[in-house]
Image (cartoon, rainbow, N blue to C red):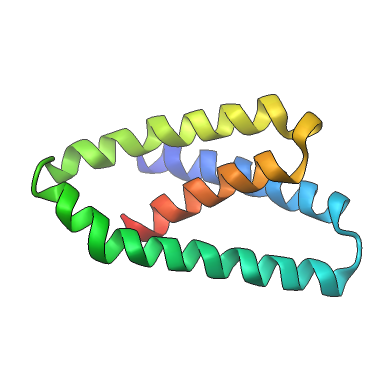
Length: 106
């Protein structure tokens, strides 16, 4: 599951960066957008890590959550491949956000 998760994460990362560069051509604006985006990822991951996951672990065993991660990452990857040409940066960012939040909080 770790190898699958890393492969899917790398695919979505590539599409995100490709779409970001195509959408925001100015380097300074792209850097600012990326900085804000990663700040949101880190903030949401922190909320999950310190508040949501401890509550979830009281009801669900940890290995079940870890087994669920690659399936959710596969869904995010398929969504990205299906929509990134039509919806652009939004779909790539949403999938990348979901995958990175899972990686950082679990």
